[in-house]
Image (cartoon, rainbow, N blue to C red; front, top):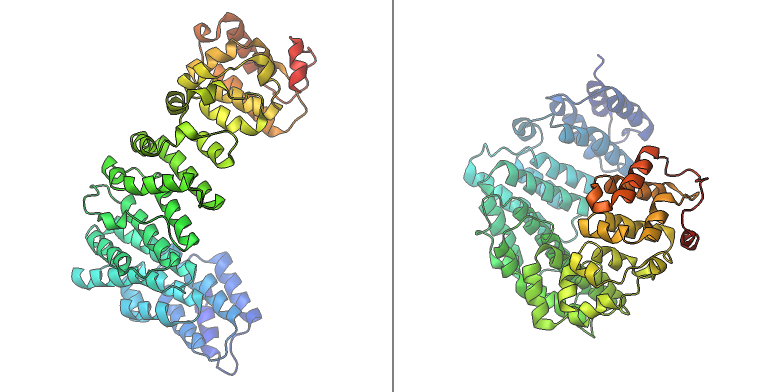
Length: 462
């Protein structure tokens, strides 16, 4: 008999409550399974009686439970080497697994029980299946449930939404019922929000079935953790491909987030999270952002002195800043290294570039890494390239200066040359067109340049 699972099954069944498996002996069997075997269909029926017997022992080291679950049970779940019929016959039905996940005191056993539910195939009938789905969703209301278990619940719901369209309404209804309970902690609220995001990711046929109550939350709360999680939820919405209706439904909440940005009573932590979300809104949904900003006049009052304002300025499109607060761009201190993220953001906008006072003396005051980042941003647009070639001293630094510096510097220079090399001679002019191609052929960005600088202003960029 060479099957490691069969050997382990015999070993476990031969143990007793007074002579349970030892970590050392168990590890020998686990190593054999880990190194030589991919779980095969039917293996659960072989191994489970022994595992069940051992788990029933009153005195059993946690490391034994961890080893059995992590090294034996979890690979069967992960590989899909079972069926719902086998699980139901060997371990128990969905109700049994749910009860185990609720009642067992060991987090690994709980997680495995939920993992077995991922094999659920709705063979008990659609109505019964939808009731099971609702009960699985209900697991998120158990506040002290380990996060590993909750993550697996979320993954299973995601799986069901992918494979069974009929469960969508049941999931929405269950999440809405939890939301409407109204007594939820920050932990439960964050789980509801995460499942809402999961539902939205599966909205390929539209979002008309998403209740507004799943999209609108109050930002200002007594629990700062709940507040920060809720702001994060609205930032996560921006990562999804959603129709405009979603953002017009949620516009009142984005307005509340904007109020947090300018509130004198909000903490820096709250303002920072709110400003990042608002900045991202300006990039993803400028129409909604514009309405919010028109109501509160946020952008016209942004300054470079405030750290949180600077976070927003590094995100809000330069075109919008140029329209609402052009003086801020005109007076921007180009040579200030700590503001380079804002400068890079504005370098992608023709409207902002037209207002920025970019000149060689100020740009070359930037440390080399920051100057290269600015150069890379300029090289990525037609208007930026025209600015670069109008600054020969900067171009010389970007193309010729060789430093004994790390891979990051070399890669930035390489990226600039690669990007500029895609341009035609009309954009760069004949001189820089030829220079860029020479550097492209030469490559070797990290070597010493023995030819010396072509303009003495390069020495000021060191």
